[in-house]
Structures are given as C-alpha cells and as structure tokens.
Image (cartoon, rainbow, N blue to C red):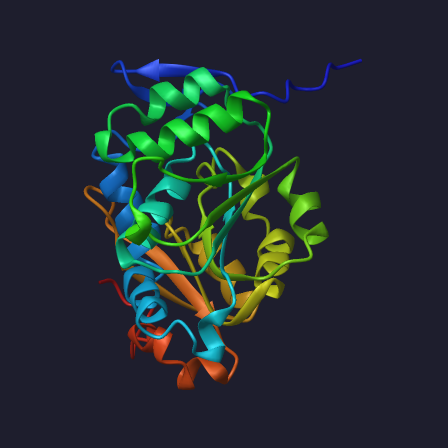
Length: 271
C-alpha cells in the first residue's frame, strides 16, 4: 500500500535563500525580487492600495465598515500575507483586515523565518508570524510591538490546512479579494481545477477581485466558466502576462472601489 505523502512541506534552497518545494519541484517565488512581484501581482493586481485608502478615508461608510477579507490558495512562506499587512498598515486603516489561506503542506517555522529574512521591512510582522507558527497556531493576530497608535487596525490571520478542493467548499466565508497563488498549473493542477475555481467564485462578495501570476489559457477559461470577468495584464519581470478577474454582478459597475477594474475592450488581446 502506498504511503500517504507527508503533510509538512519539504523545502530545499536555491542560490542560498530561494525556497523550493521538493514536492512540486518549483520555487515558492521567482528569482527576481519576490516581494516586488507579490506586490505587483496581488496587491496592485487587486487594486488594494486604492481600496485600503478609501477605507482609511471613509471608515464609517456602510459598504466598507465591515472587516476587509482576503483569501489565498496556498499560504507558502506567508510572504503574500505580510505584503497585504504592510499595505494595510501603510494606508492607516482603523478597521480589521482578515486573511484566510488554504494550505495543504505547511512549511516549518525555521523555513518560514529563513524565507522571509531577506526583507528587513517585514521583520517586525514576520517575527510575530514565525513565533505564532512555531507555537502551532494557525489562527493568530499580527502586531508590531514597536509600532505606534497610528500603525493601522487589526490584522487577523487564519490558515486552514488540508486539500483546498475540500477546505474551500467547506469555508463559510466570502472574500473581497482572492490571491490565487498555488504552484504552476503544470506542477500543481489540483489548485487550478474548474470545480475549485467555481467554489472560489461562489465565495466572493459582490465587486470582489481575484488575481494570479499565471496567464494559462485553462486557468482563464475556468475563471470565465465560473462567471467571472477576466483580463490578461502585464506580468512582473520576465513574465509577460498575469491574470486578474472580478465578480460580474451589477454592483461592480456602481462600486467606486473597483473603477480601475473596468474591462478592457479586448481583454483577450496580448498586452
């Protein structure tokens, strides 16, 4: 009888500080500036700086008074979560940012710490994340003890372990923004199956946005089949294209948070 694969991720290292999944034979991020790439694909790709700024400016507006919810397929080293947390803090939002990730093979705390070490700007929040991770916590709050009162509102992290094809359909939440960041469709096809993409689309607030580094035709087709509006956008560095999508429901056209996501006249044409 074949033994089940280990739950915990096995990480090797390329060029000293680039984490690579032994299971999937692929890096957790590229060889270029990974933090800049995450910001391009997921933070800018979901229009988060402008959306966070609006929440900071109009905190009592009913449509934005509730917590802002981000969801991610694949937590990896936690780099995406920290990039979102930094953006939230910089915007000065007084409310709560909730970040839910679905991870089948969590990394160890030492591997997480090593992977996040190259970015000093992340150090305070990264230290808090690694400490919680090392204690076995998968639901925790991020805070910087040295930050002042104006550092922004609460940041709550939840990592749901297990196969996303089972855990996402079982999630009772909805997201304002989805980060689709599994390993490539060729190496990790499970995270890009149409049924899972459909479950993700069903767990979106009206006007929700989604982004991913891949522009694979099968991924874009699955997003469109799930009822989402899809466009191909310039990628980061050597990657020619990335993908972003958004909820089609009528509220999108009226929601000022998403005006920057108006569809291109020819979204499938090369950028």
